[in-house]
Image (tube, rainbow, N blue to C red; front, side, top):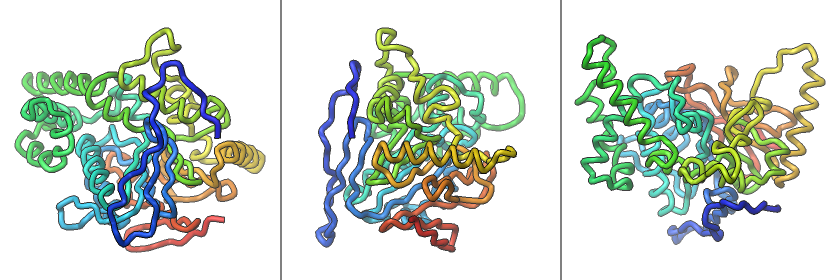
Length: 373
């Protein structure tokens, strides 16, 4: 698989092995290539994919517990062993606990590595929108969380690692002590909201600490022969270079892109109907009268894309699926956004499990087995 070079690339990273501390394991260590991670060799491990969370911490915990990844005792302990978890973006917007969700994912990532597992994320369109300064889908409670976290960061002497990883343990207490999101109007409430907007802008502007945290994740991730993204990967994305796209987005989020290297915002990844994070070709409903012809066209695009990257199937989020997690286009596209957030459809969580070339949809206490061919 060819990787195109980039004149303003992140520091090159050699493939790195994640620790595999379990002495009883016969699996090889996970190998990660790319900066941010782009290609992962998981060596036969179970993979769990979780769709859009949109600020709903309770649904995140529910989904992870359901998949056997998180303890149910409230201690937020990783119970997934050597499992690889992939979260498909859109953690931000529509819900109040965005930073807490990101903090939990980081905490689980640290824990998973000690067990021979791993946690990966890809950024969605709501992550890129917020780094652009587009806050139109931010609810009052999310602005409040940003203000709380900004103050907590100061208490941690601006030690980002300490504050970010521990936020999941203290966020509920801060939320209860300072109920910012009251609907009653007052001049003080207006001042508080302005402070929240300023805090969010400081955290998420390119080069801001939370934007740099998001920059640790790409918009496309290939784990073995499965391709993961928020919206959808198309042939021209592959031609440009998957690792190059991830590098472009990461540089922009870190505030390192400049005019000499083209548009400040990486258009191919983050702008337009056919960009990686906005594309709905694979996840939208087919309602026009030329349904069969259109379906064949999409199948062809999907097959071309997957052939170019050497993958069997693609897993996408972005568009809530009223019928639940489903597979379309000759079993080549799995659509796993079920709108679980209370800010979207408030549906029950569903997750996709991939193991030994079989995909299973986990729904609550049910396990619907759908064999991937």
